[in-house]
Amino acid sequence: MSEEKYPINIWVNEERYEKLKDAGLAHMCEEMLAGMKVIRVYANAAQRDKILKVFPTAKFDSATTKSIELLPRHVKDKIFDKVVEKKSVDILDEFLSAY
Image (cartoon, rainbow, N blue to C red; front, side, top):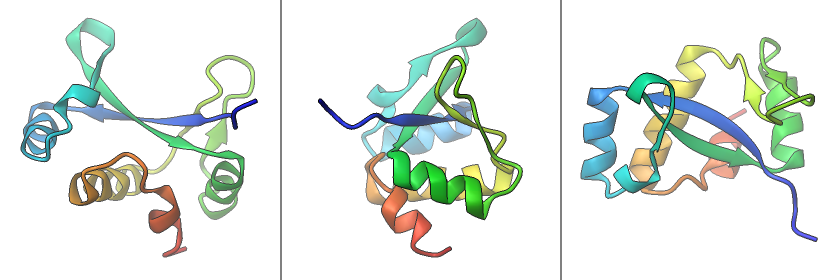
């Protein structure tokens, strides 16, 4: 059985989309509401638990989406920047090492 993954949804505006295109990651965007795009960064259980501990406003939607919600904007911005820098969505270990 594979390890469960918990998404962090990061909304992608036109400026972010251009950065993702430049990094070769535009294909990872998913269409959501009314043509808006999202990129998903997945956390494992240990990463999810650390995020919830370090960022008290964050919540885990255990009932429906199994996603990590309500992260502060500056945190999502840092996650997005790390995705572009590393050209990968597998960046949470490195991101969380700063906390």
